[in-house]
Length: 389
Image (cartoon, rainbow, N blue to C red; front, side):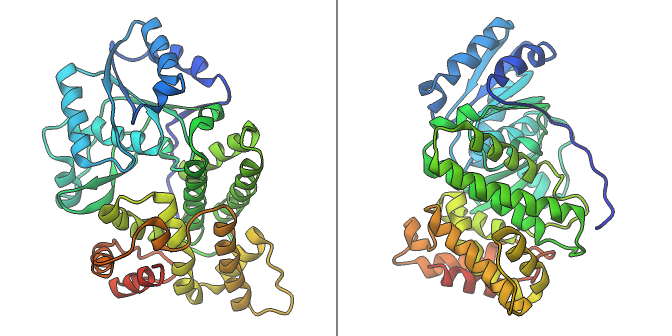
């Protein structure tokens, strides 16, 4: 594996009742004014809002609410939150929700501490913020692993870009699998595929030297596949949901990426597709992955064959390495169908007049990942998207 420096700053409180164990002690160390950030109001319907507010009030905090964070958070929403944080003198941000809420807050945190525009700062000036409002997270659905790192995916509607940005780390994260029960099953399955994608795209990054990080990634994939099936079979069972919560964290806390140059090409394609369509992230990844991997498999057949055998149980007897590798991609596609995710863009409502032109624009604006098994160009990205229609 490559040389590396590894640090892990986020303290994790895992399990049922973790919120009550976490917040009183953690809030004792933060300032008076807390921004409570959340999405469309589901935390009010499921009782989590009252639980969090009770703990905030019990610790004497003044609460500033920042609500309405959308599934694909926009840069305009970031600026709204940052302005509110500056106006109210927010000392700490508590993000309660899934990856979108958490990602939005990471950038709110750093934007609130600088007069410079952080989009301009990061993408034009190639500088990254070094100061932010301290943060914590109460995670309500698994998938993104957003609570585990300082990366955030934000949509800039003005420039038609959906891109990763660098924001603040969380000092702590609460992972209670019971909170995931209130999310629709399709959202849970979408999140499960997102974490599978994280694990796959890390595994298929270079180098390919049978390193420990790859072995952990393969194990994480098997855990995700088994427990997604178990969750679908027994939706109320917290056991599989707990496993998925931790698998999501493992996929994005840096451990699988140690010594690797990751290959997040499917994510980059889907991000730009989302910038143009506002589509569901996990659904888009499910559509893109098999087709994209068929374009890449010839560049790393041994890595794909290992994936086929160790994750999907493909029998290699009587097959060439290339045949085993292709069988693994077939197994991935069959699994996507099995768990009820789409396999075509048309199943996501992406079709009709203007679709080809839109997909061309997506391809032309997609960031190319040089560490992928095969380095694509814009024309091949467009070919992949056309095949996904």
